[in-house]
Length: 122
Image (cartoon, helix red, strand yellow):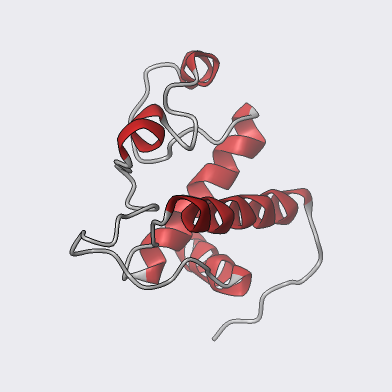
């Protein structure tokens, strides 16, 4: 296990905010995180990165020609329209209990997300 800096940088605050949002939204919608917690960690990290860079948590699992235009359009800002309307999450962040990839968790440890982020950077 790696040592993670616990100083609250701006990016750590955004990461924590996205983690808290994801947990609350999963509980509110009766959905669960992926059975592989690294999937959840990577998606939350991507949402936080977009929130910091673009001002909105644009879905990190899609390709965009123009991210700024997509943010203004709001369709793919998390929770995206397919998630809000049909509980369909392309990222596998919010999974309905009947999905084979659904885990039993609606919470994830912030330190775990930071560890996954650090492992991706190295």
